[in-house]
Length: 425
Image (cartoon, rainbow, N blue to C red; front, side):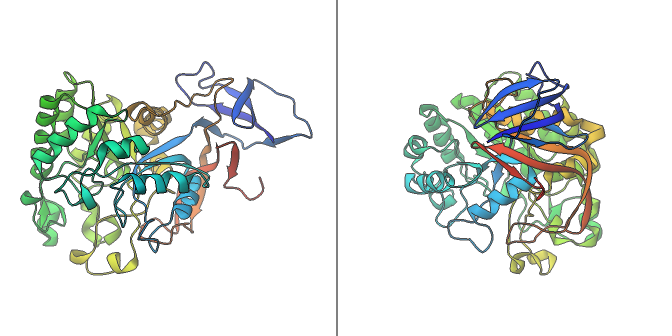
């Protein structure tokens, strides 16, 4: 079927149609025409929403999936539905499953299973067996099977020797990239929230910024020694942005990401003891939040991630000290940005950090809004308000349910299909 998106603003800084209001005609898996006005016919499905925009399809880095092993939290089918609602045509999933994605058989399972699903699911293979940080996993075999990078996911590497060997190994891979959350667990035993005035006031054990910066400095020195490729995932402090900026001046294969939560919230939001805001890394100070925003603008930070982590009620609906870290967010990440950050950062920064830069960092096929290009597209309305009253995830660990948000995803085009979030389309 042919689809015609009418009177839509095109957002893609690499396209000659950037910031222009045009009609876009899609047939099968390609954009076949872009003009100010394209006539329709009975064979064409016309789509229109006032004030809407399209961009290259969004990609989420480090999405946590439940399947295999924790399907009660999230299945590949449910994360696909949530991704469509959130505007993501692809996710790069972490290996923290049961079993972990630590050999070619698990990587092949994800790739073969995702062929039947509406979105692209790119597996990130584990660095260590079972993500336990001890013995190295089958990195080269996983790379040949389709792993796009390597990480122990939500578990930070504590073993410096293992990190160094992994950085050496991935240089032999076509997708040679190590992704790690910099964190020295010995400097924050049993930490709950950011160490500071709020943690003291609430009587909660703190997680000092030092635990991040010490680990980050170690990672960057090992990166310099190995001359490999590395992404510091979800940095959260002003000190970390300064370190990344300094090392980027001499090392072009250094990248970084940030959680959307750390761009919006700060540690004094924890005064209500909301376990759904118990996140890792923790929410830091307002000064840290501002430094992260500045680092988005100067490209010290390359990628914004949704920080989606589904957890069952038994992990969240308990005393704060015993609750697990994490929240679901892939359905609401863009709307959080549009509601809270649009004025500070602007829509083009969102597109750059979730659609363009991730493909460059992970050496994925480019998606550009030009005639003849593959139709991998997110269609959204920045001004439309909506109520977040239902999630596709089996898990409900979010503070945003029943909230009114600004910025609604209307649908996505991917894998030769249009998936609408509006039942009327």
